[in-house]
Each structure stands twice: as structure tokens, then as C-alpha cells.
Amino acid sequence: MNIKKDIFPKNFLFGTATSAYQIEGAANEDGRKPSIWDDFCHQPNRIIDGSSGDIACDHYHRYQEDLDLIKTTNLDAYRFSISWPRVISNRSGKINQAGLDFYQRLTDGLLERNIAPYVTLYHWDLPSYWEEKGGWLNRDTAKAFQEYAVIMAEKLGDRIPHWITHNEMWCASFLSYEIGVMAPGTHDMAKALQAAHNIMLSHGLAIEALRETRSDIKLGIAPNYLPSYPSSDSEEDKRAAHTFDGYFNRWFLDPLKGRGYPQDMVEIFGDMMPEIQSGDMEKMALPLDFIGVNYYNSNWYRHDENGGLFKLKKEQPQGLWLTQDRDVYAKGLYDALMRFHSEYGFDNIYITENGAAFEEQVVVEQGIKRVHDEGRIRFFKEHFVEAAKAIEDGVDLKGFFLWSLMDNFEWPGGYTIRYGMNYVDFETQERIAKDSALWLKDFLDS
Image 1 (cartoon, rainbow, N blue to C red):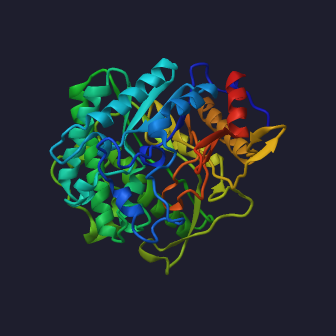
Image 2: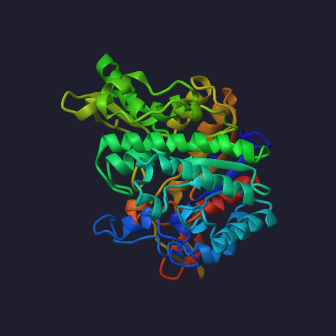
Image 3: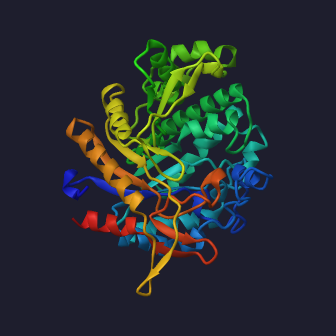
């Protein structure tokens, strides 16, 4: 497949993305406090290779080199997250100046290179001092998030125009509190629902306060979206797919559009429903300037009476090709974008994450270290084509952020899964541009 950049509008934004805990390291330096991920990683059998983000990619010390990687690839923008426990020292909201200074330097480095900064306030690294008070099960955490957001906007809003409150709220709630494979690692649906509610409330509180703090910044949120297709045309399978969609997608998208929680899911959850106070849903529905879509793969479901609370079973079709950890269905990105546009009426949409992992090795050719990742190039091409089709069909898509700038700490997968365009040798911290980064540079030059 041979594609060129001109399949996108001239002002279309191309960027890459990372998150603080996955790349920064320096976990115990310059006043940074522990997060739930520090605590989680240091519990036995939580991370597949027993690793942590203590050092990660050492981005805290090597950020200038990493910003050069972005510039060399001809990317327009960089989406990064702020580590809440690095910049706020305690529950009273004391600013850690050394931590804040790092993000000042990072932002200045981006602007010096003419790279647009897009910041995410929360990418899962809740300070441990808030987890001690119940974490996202405590409404006070939502208020604390609002206060943290305001402080960051006051300090960085003059140079960072685009602000994302939360990344992948489903992961921060259901994957963390129900399924338990992410921090804090509990297994309780009622707690997951309460955490999801308080996270969404914190989003609304932050939007409200940020509008008052800085009228010149653009505000959004970045849910992960998982298309849910029926395994057959039967009504039972359609209902199963719709139920999973309610659990994963509609539970967050409907409140953002003022529709409240989906009634079919409310009936399923019954007495597990979270505490909802007067005004909560109105806060969640405050207008956004833009919205992100994190898309990686799609799922298919069939009805199964023995399939737990939702009475369904996942059943992937034949014919999909595979990455290291997922099936690939690029058309799912098109379907996601069309739904955000047509059913939900979102404008100013960004693909805030999209990428693939592969088992890779470094080879030396004519004295040059190379990493051949043809699968990632194929993945990029297929998803670029679907994004361009969505634009042709009326979607107001503004930009595309690829996950990720470099190999990093991949949550429960530790360092066994590589999503980067740039290879990282975690022993030496050497960065090596993979073929996908070289291809992307040429594509953006075209």
C-alpha cells in the first residue's frame, strides 16, 4: 500500500504520545512522591517481568534527546502527561517546584522546536497520598483533581493551548477496580462504578474551574473506544454486543453528551450503581472544545447464558492479522470516528492514541543499528487510510497522535511489549529509530 500525506487536509496535525509513568523514571528524585503505580509495581506478581517505572526510559534526564526524536521525524505535536505526584507534594496542594520546573523545561523545549504541546492531566498515576484516603472511591479526590488542574493551567496555560483532563477512563476504573490488572488492583464491580463516576465528576469539576481560570485554553478528554460488533445477525448477539458497548463505550460517552448513564446498563448494574449527587451529571456534560479517541482494536460478541453479568462471550472472527498483543481491524477506527461524529455530534476530534506492538530485535547492517518493524508500518498505513476516509465522509478530524514515541513501561506487560517508533535499549537507554519512524518521516515529508 503506497499512500502519501496529501490524503489528509493541509492543516492536519500529526503527533506522537507518551505518559509520565511509562517514560519519565526518576521516581524518587527532586521531591516526587509515590503514585499508585509505584505501589502496585512493587507488589509481587503484578507486573509480568517484575519491573516498574522507577527508571523507565529515563526521560526525566533525557528529554532533550527525546524531543529531538520528535523533531527529526517531522511531527507537528507531542501529547504528554503530567505526573500529579511529581508536581503536587501533599493533600494540601503544596507545589513541588522542582517537579513543575521539569514540565516548564519540557514545554519550552517543544516550543523551541516548533512542536505543539498537548497535555494530559491524568494518565493513571494517582498520588499515593490520595489513595490512602480512598483514591477514586472518595469524592474528595475529584475535588483535589480540580485544584491540581487549576494549578497546572495557571503555571503552564500561557504556553500550552490544548488540555486533556483524563486518559482512558475505562482503564482507570473498570480495568483497575473490577478486573484488577491495573493499579490499585481490586476486583469489585461496585467499586469500579464508583471510581468511574468520581473520575467523570473530576473531569466536569476541572472543566468548570479551568473555564474560569483561563478562557484562552482548549479543553477535552480522551476516552478509549472499543467497537463492539455482534458475532452474527441474531438479535441475541446484537443485544450482547450492545451490552458490551454500554459497559465500555456508552457508560462514558453518554454522560459527556448530557444523556446520563445508559438506562439498559443501569438496570443491569442494579444496586451496584454509584452514589450520584445532585448536579453531578450536569458537571460531566459541560461543553468540550475537542475530544480524543484512543483506538487500538475491535471486539465481536455473541450471547452466552453462562457469560457472567452481561451474558456474553467474546468471539473474534477469522482473517484478522495479529500484532504482539492484539487483533488488527483498521476499519474499526473509521466506525469509531463516524459514531463520534454522527451519533454523538462531536466536533474537533483527535485520534489521541493508535499504535501496535511487535516482537523486535536490533540488527547491524553496514555498521548501522536497525530495527525492521514492517508490521507497524502496515498498521500505520491501514489506519491512516481509514482516518482519511472518515474525513471524506464528514468527520471533523483534526489530528492523529501515534502511540508511542518510544518503547516504554507497558503497564502490567512491563518491558515485554514494545509499542515505540523508536527502540529503547533499557540497559543502556540508547534510542534507535525503527523503520516505522523512518517511514513516517518520509511520509510527512511527502
